Length: 174
Image (cartoon, rainbow, N blue to C red; front, side, top):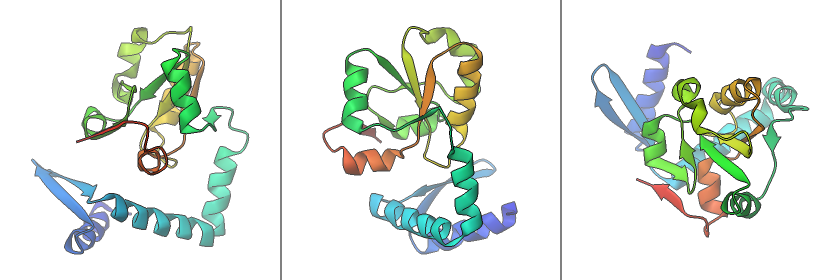
């Protein structure tokens, strides 16, 4: 999709008040306005994946046999973090991290990971996450960290899913 086409789509969403935007220099940053708007978008996305067998197959093939995927409950993961067994690594940009992140996560944006790798311990399992199931930042982080000998996996749940399903777990939102 071209930049012009994407911009037109985002303007339609903005006019429908489903997203807001902040203009900074030559760039406009768009943000979904609410949790309900996110869930509406998520439902449309999931329906599109369900109805398009090619996309479903691509995603299934991509995830098939992926040993880095971590399937765990939020309570279990948080308990392991609290016990000091796991480091939860947010590889989103600092801006995204400052807006919303899972409690106890440490922020090392993907573009800084090589420089800051010494901040991580090889003695603990690392669970990396980014914006969600279709975000590839955590895949790149897992690849980089595994090449350096770290025990690392990726969390595929989206942060809004944590907000909805794990209300007892503190989510920092700004």
